[in-house]
Length: 214
Ligand code: SAH
Image (cartoon, rainbow, N blue to C red):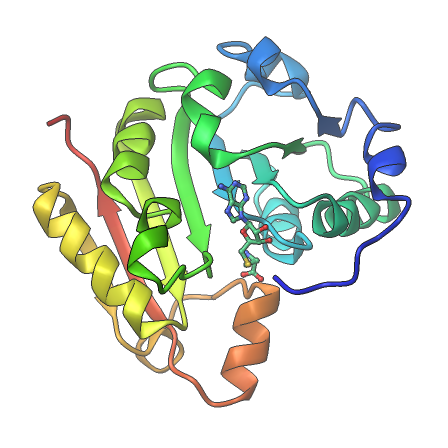
């Protein structure tokens, strides 16, 4: 996400330890204790400015939400949203998805969202794609037995690559759409990117799937 550097971002994200976790490794296996209620945990990776997680959490008080973002200048916007409109069921992690197995214990997450992940089109960068087989292995390890992953993108290259890695990983496909907004009656909570690309008339590709132990 291209964005101006927010100078005060680091100072701000360090000032709200109850909303913004900077030491996720220290909470491995005990995330429930940070929430008011013990209930299923849904994780979003790469939350950007946090519109999606905030709106979804607002309409689903029966779920605890955790959002990870590695870029301080955008996660600070998600934090500001949470300060302006507090929710008891959202916690943010300033961290890197590469390390999620040190953040979460086996089976600790019930559901995972990957929304408009960076496409990393160059072959030499493919290990950074959030649907690279190495990432899928990490997700499989932190997800509960029936945990579902939902993936949305505007980028055909990333969609195609993801389909391929999912087939190679023997993933179980649940739903698939080549134009999500035209093909579903379900209520869709839109991310920032999704709003922008949908307004521009681009189709949104969608896959929901489960990962099996290899
Ligand atoms: N989900 C938002 C933002 C999409 S842009 C939306 O749909 O509007 C992708 C975001 O993922 C960026 O903010 C980027 O900083 C973040 N990101 C990319 N790789 C990441 C990683 N390994 N760990 C955490 N966040 C990551």
